[in-house]
Image 1 (cartoon, helix red, strand yellow):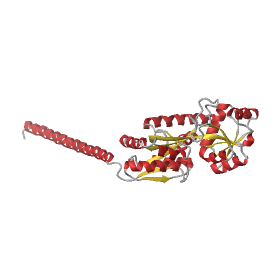
Image 2 (cartoon, rainbow, N blue to C red):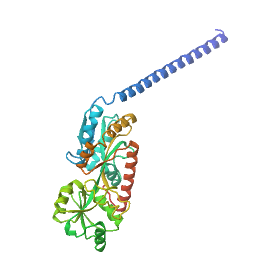
Image 3 (cartoon, rainbow, N blue to C red):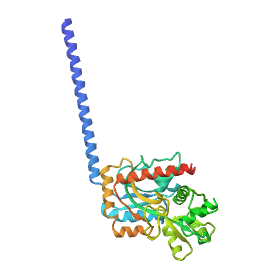
Image 4 (cartoon, rainbow, N blue to C red):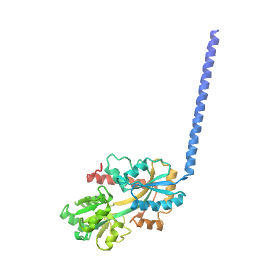
Length: 347
């Protein structure tokens, strides 16, 4: 065979191989683009048709408490707006940790929501060095629903009638006043410790396993003070068995409109409340988050919803997802500072 002919043939074969390889590559790229385009279209279509089935709202506490009441008030109204049933899924345990973990590991498709609060999103992460979730990274905030300030409740035998008198008495006898809380690391416990830190006083903490036994000993005078849910205290204020001297919120408690806040009583900047908000798992589509937020905004400031919240001593808030995200970050940072100051760890 002529060497020139053989060389020409090899070159032509090589060119053919390169053309065939290029065609296969272009074909694969086109197919990939089609697959990606289809995926994007399908994702967009699924968001357009959301919700097409019931939505689960995880409540990280047992039925019957304040969290459950708020969740059902929201669920009842949101289901009518979205056209799908909102199923309340109570997952108590670990002070809200169990429910939070379950929400974090759910699909970010808009069909799982979470009722978060000061415990699950601020106290637990601040008091656990190795928390199983990050409240900033692992959630998509939707809406801050409500805040529920506590009240400073005293047994009459303590013999004080104002915050200034309480501080003065505590300073004269450091550690002599025993205060109750419904558990180490609870919002009641940390609200009292924040008060002590800002007032420069010492009191003795007596933790209980829940509100009921703590309140029973407060009524009996075994402990003299408790930062308590306003709803739980109200009947005993009306009968004179307990007295209140201040509320803990940034504004006055709706159940006690004549009661000054601690900030108004001399502790400028004091703020400590329970709060409730709706979140979704991180990476939930923004369109879905905004649609849920829009639904909540349509009823959150209406009288019937505010009345439902008032049964828990809570005030409606609302706002954008971005505002709620900033609120969580601020609450977490405040709690970290306090926890470090009082050397509290739940690990």
